[in-house]
Image 1: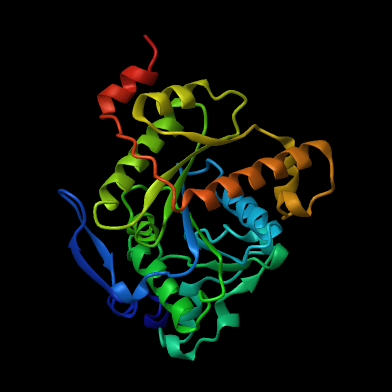
Image 2: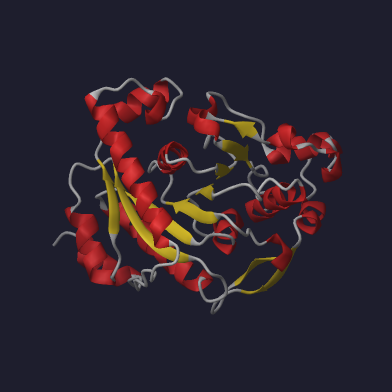
Length: 309
């Protein structure tokens, strides 16, 4: 690998305007510069364990907001850079890839180099990330927001959605929480998904001590039933705000590289669209309302709640 191909983490960190400091009890995290605050738009971050359907939820949610007449920006925060492919129909270049091409001279970039228009006018950005073991995804998220602000791409935006990778301890996981108004957790009606949700709630609890992010609720995804999700929510003071059964419509739409909103008006497609529009309306209204304040469970207690005798 040539020096040009390697990720210059110190330069990227400096360019992102980040500093280190305490972030909740017992935690040292990357902190955003106050100048990087997203103003004007309502900002949502979508979380959940790996493979649970965060990108599907995010893209259909973006399309739902667009169908409501909102100006939407979706930012994929996973090195796989597949968050927006159902909106654009392709895997678009990432911010980190584009920065590498100009040797991290961000002033050489134009918005069309890293921002791509998807269905309904949704603006799509894939932050990307460093190769495994070579740097922190939090720096890349910070640099992405900085680029968007430098090019005034956030000034005419109503909704920003961060689609976040599943690693709870990663800087790429934490960085969107510094920008978000509300965090949404995608889960399934099983132990592993709910266990991950409990960890995510704990992370948001810690972040909310220094930032404005609060929890909006959870989406039960790919699940016929919601009994275990609801039992957990009742125990900790959380709330299920949507239920997306394991529709074949989702499988068909992803094979077609489309959101449900581009698909034919078949019965299951229409049901899915209506659920995403309902979710978008709830999230839009949640900003300004009293937020949820659940208390995550210690590991032993969640095992006792959900485990089998």
